[in-house]
Amino acid sequence: MLFKSPSYFLYGFLLFSIPSAFADGTQPLPSLADEGLPDAQYDYGMRLINGHDYKQDPVAGRQWIEKAAKQGKTEAETQLGKMCLEGEGIPANVAPEDSHDYKCAKKWLKKGAANGDKKAYYYLASMYENGLGVQQNITKAFKYYQKAAVAGDSNAQNMIGNYYYYGITPIQQNYTSAKDWFEKAAEQDNLAAKNKLAGMYRLGMGVPVDTNKALDMYKHLCKKGQQTSCFAVSDISEKGK
Image 1 (cartoon, helix red, strand yellow):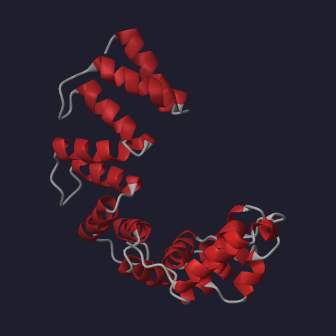
Image 2: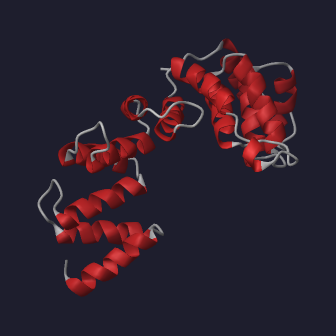
């Protein structure tokens, strides 16, 4: 469980004790951020990044996230690491190829991971999986995905399922383990995991063939806007399998 800083409780008190001050989206959040409260800085930064209540401004948002991260707010550490990794919140005059800062990403994601943040584990896994700013190391990637998956991150659970499903070296192929992880992710409505499970039931990979179950799953996914699942529905309806 992540430790809540004293400022978190102060910020919460201010938020709920003077809710009318937040009604117009201008006060007192910027003032609280200016006061140096890391929770307010993080909240304000995320709102600027996403354009919630304030005009969208990812560059300014990243600056506030960095202020909060430097004060040790775990979510800010991870968010800043992600932004460095993906080149987000960069001024428009910076060329796309220069927007990614993997050294920055590793530094802040390591801090987030040290505080048990599951998203930090996930992004570190991605770095090691793809060799982004670090030497590619699938074993390390798998370990970080595992940490994120055990902590409840559905994308990481899906990735662990993929490692077992495909038998990505050095992980041995194991459909039973793949199914278990896909099911965990599917319980959190992870659509990619649900699609993989549907395919396993359709083809009988690690489970008995169950075309009806696969078809029901594909129909559900099709309604969610998954076009490949819509094609699968048509294919099964036409061929019967």
